[in-house]
Length: 425
Image (cartoon, rainbow, N blue to C red):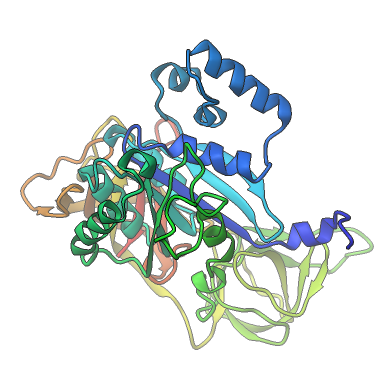
């Protein structure tokens, strides 16, 4: 059997991005530490350092949570504050974990970590069951249209690995989950501390017939999570080498946001409306016969059309919505409240322009999912539906159809700080 490392296979291996969420002390950091340790994704000196830190804290076991709680303030408090990104791989897949905080005051951090995730991992303490924070995390996952949500019922060792406890949590959640827009919800009973059903099957829960958490992460189908029907290519940069070798080269570089592009396809440039055909599709590694999300490519057209950053290449008979008056579901991320009538810079795909906040439609109570039509004051970590008007038309899709062309960020022009993340409704 050939065990040699193949760099090309590794580079082309499918990547799963997942985010973790849960209430304080539900064991997120321990679970991630267990995943890293049991998949042999940490070095011996890291393990030794964690073992030494555990002994200093007076713990009689190796506290794997310390592998991920990198900030000093987190280690002192024993909680996760910032978004920490971790990387590991198995023979089947590469993974990026966004370890996000569970506290209500860090909702913006969770949104940041979850915005590009294929899957959300939400931890539930088996002793406590479904809490308000569990509902809030599930709602944010639904709001961000994360396609797959896995609930890890953790600390099963503290309830004697009881099937009855597990079944009660499932029935409690199913009533609430009917309000959510999530395509795929799974449940796995685990003990992050003991390693049950994380990488290896649990001998203590023979009644559970589903997959382990790692097997689920390795095999869950994510290829169809992208929109492969509606062709969207926001132009980030126009490549003109002006060299003798590439004297007439004019390529449009960017990341494909939707659809499949092939040489010979008839396309249209927005906002001009001019049409042409794709001459070829270039990448660093050579030409492609087809390109699809989330690949970054350079498209060359048969005709010279005036296209610049912020323009979009689409199919002639399949264009996005075009407009300046837009409604978005906004997560506010700044201490200074949202100003009705205020002007902000806005970024949509590769387009930068300005907008004005016209109206706050309602604020969402993320614990009950109720709409508050009276309170129009939107502060840090709050979520509201608002309407804005942009200085130029945007080329967009609804966020539920395409997360790339349906998302925006608002920026305070005075200090260039991102103050809001929005999903176009």
